[in-house]
Image (cartoon, rainbow, N blue to C red; front, side, top):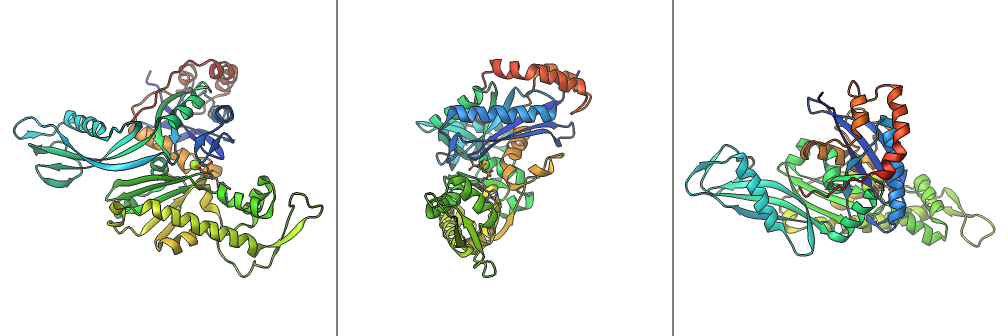
Length: 430
Ligand SMILES: Nc1ncnc2c1ncn2[C@@H]1O[C@H](COP(=O)(O)OP(=O)(O)OP(=O)(O)O)[C@@H](O)[C@H]1O
Ligand SMILES: [Mg+2]
């Protein structure tokens, strides 16, 4: 029996963990089978600082996604972020045999391994080596040399590297939940996969995913990735500013931000009064929305300027890109997109994830771009491999969410399987 191709993605964010199980149909389209989201307090600026809390959130989100899909998840692709993630574009000479010959699959594979060896940097781990273009016998800009004739081939790749320690901490937190790691996918690449159109990638676009603790950047031009970077500033900074400035607890600051926060200076609501409860005061305090808006505006301007510094590398500025796509929960702050338009002077679009069928409406939101993107990228670029328990896999092969029997078999096996798994997932550099 041919088994269905089910694979899972886990986005371990600074504010929440999101697990998504999907199925790849024979026509290549991807359908969502289950989503699970759990709040997470185990990370700071995208890095694991409390492994136990991270593992607990992974377990909870895996449990919800498994329950929604009716099948236990055993392995997954994991998203990775943090300011240690850096990129560079490198040219590598692919050793050629003497004389003109046709470029074969084997040469393409060799090109990637030569480029990976060139990208190797002491103390750093290679996360991705993505082909950008090729040069054949001095002719540059070849996108796919397969089947072409050449005596000499060069490959240009986009190499993304990270520090080993945060990679190990993240994979350890996932493995402690009994989940095997089938691949690490850097979050900017994932978010881009879920929100960008072909046309945007072709014409040139800057993608920014503003999360709780990080802002992930990916720049594309002429269909290929040009620049990847992570800024360790996100939506949390806005909340923290409110908490510190008004001496209120973080929970209240987050509520005030979600309800009244705006990075735009709106004269119509500026004098509206908001009640807050500063520490040590017996009575609530009334503040103007203008005061909240001023803080959000200042922080937004600062954040966008820091992002601009991370983006404006010479190899990006020379491309004259004028489009920007924003995603991630942080861009839902009222007025943030307008502020980005003003600071960058770019055409700006706020995007939610696309490209997967059956995504619940509640997850069709910028906060889930990375989660959906990890799944899409993994399904499209990594080798097929089952991420669910084979027992339930066979039981559901007649349909993705079939039958109550399936759900009861899942209920029986989930705690034991998740707690006792010996999967030894290994990060994969692709
Ligand atoms: N309506 C809103 N207005 C303002 N901010 C919002 C809104 N909705 C969500 N946010 C902010 O979005 C952030 C969470 O976004 P997201 O879920 O993308 O982050 P994450 O993936 O958990 O974190 P990271 O990617 O940085 O590790 C929080 O700071 C939250 O306050
Ligand atoms: Mg995120």
